[in-house]
Image (cartoon, rainbow, N blue to C red):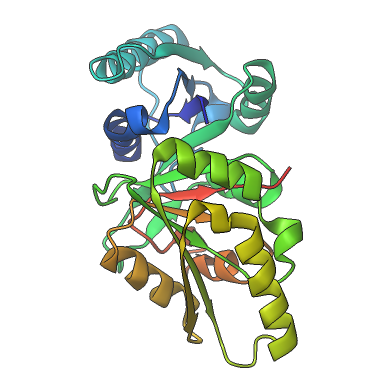
Length: 280
């Protein structure tokens, strides 16, 4: 995760994201940061929830100038702490998803970082259209920082682990490199019901999981509950976990963590930053 792309919409979620990278950038070992903003009509309503609009004031030239000034301000904030990191800004009016994929390819980006807007609705966070699209349809590694996230260093990291087809889905090499770079303690947590898997399959998957990552000396926790997400988040908070790592799936943990609310907005049920890590 040496090279990161931060998506910005200049909201409170962006402020929290910049603060999180300032606090944890050294531990992450970041070498390059690119801060990106799309100022055109295609770039509005990207990170913010449905129904919330960022007003466009003045003509396009003035909007561009204001956006550049704000990007430079964010860059300077990061440089106060990350003096040895190469930090650049980029602005255009491209559709965000298109721009993200171009930037990731052209700039060899390892990780895309973006904020999501926290609410007081039981700690849930409204997720805008672009984050939802990137999460559901693309194999980018994404770090999501809730605007109401707690300030825990990443000394403790939790892998929220599904035990089905573990060898096919777990990015074990990438995970091990990431955890070692952080010099973090890893908790591996699986929450399931008694009848989720037969005993033989369960033992087989647990054995494979241990073989893949035992050299990290993690703590393994196999918890029994039908309420997967609350149990995982309660565990993470009790251990002062600074980052939850999850592998995107169409079922299981992420299916429950991300859901549609009554207002049809995707919501994220955590105040702890979440890293979606893909196996490539």
